[in-house]
Length: 490
Image (cartoon, rainbow, N blue to C red; front, side):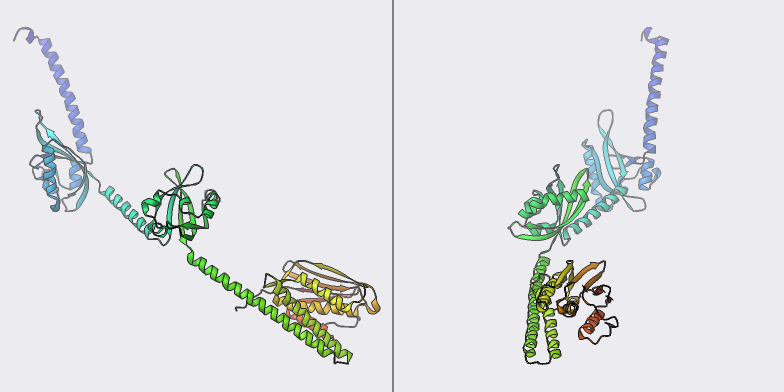
């Protein structure tokens, strides 16, 4: 050693540098120790024979053993009995210089319970680079695993429901132009019904399984789905073999990770369509039967009218003869209703305005030989069912016949006005004439005239009211509310 090497200033400088490095090293060690002490992960030093060398508080928190209980013992104390070969395999990797990262496994706690951990193991080397041990970092992932298991269970349940639903379920994207894109998922029912396997359907889009008519209507359906968020409509799907299946489609729009998706549930309505066709056929048969009934009733009433006409030829008494003729006209007025129902497309109702027009013209031809009486008709297009039309038809016949027979003696000129309208829930029927009028002392509700007694009885039957105005001739106003029509099962 020369004199220069013993220079006090140089030695002091070297000591100061060494002290600085030492302090820095201590700070780094303190920092690392702090990380090891306060981390929630288990950091364990392990010898190549499996002996636990170091044990941090995180390891105590996860495994339940204190440092005194763990250090010096074999790491196998943490391994479940059925998995003891695991540590030998890990140590073999470490001895060869390999690392183990994010290895998920189970560890046994002091109380015997199991904990799920994500394990990372790295080799520890000395200055010469020789592996002398292993550093193990374990993170408790029990909560994560429980969440994953719940998600897996939820997904499994969803998949069970999805694939075992009675209806076919389709999930598809919506393209930029608003039209349906390719399927992203379909269930087993969709595959079985259409004859395609799962992979084949995922390469297709709705238009590939829709009928030609459905494809033409698809823009309208998609517009409704996007504007309202949901739509239900009937459509036809085509199987791989080319057969058509009618379905009721219920579609819902939603967003999945920023993309517009449509979930559609298709219910096979083949049986419903068959039942509807059968019902239509049955209804057509019943309509034909009803038409035939109305036709036969009309014919029978005309036969009765003809018989009365034939019988009247042998009657000499004028009063009796008039009774026969009135009965004949009543039968014809009822026959006219059944004739119009037979000719109508609606077997429930009759256009009563049209009925009044036809009946009054027939009565005019029967009673009037000149042109002294003017007929005024104010009739709305009002539908009545047969339960109301028959009694009201007889009332029309009686009131107009009375005006024609008695209001204008000796061909006195005048007018007959007939009105029929609906005002709110109530029907108003009026027959008025400008003739000689009824006697002031005549009570029309108690008259012995068969015609007026019939009118009063029929008005009561219809739960209506009848009013008489004698101001200008005779005016009858009948008001009634139509009762609900009940179909008769055939």
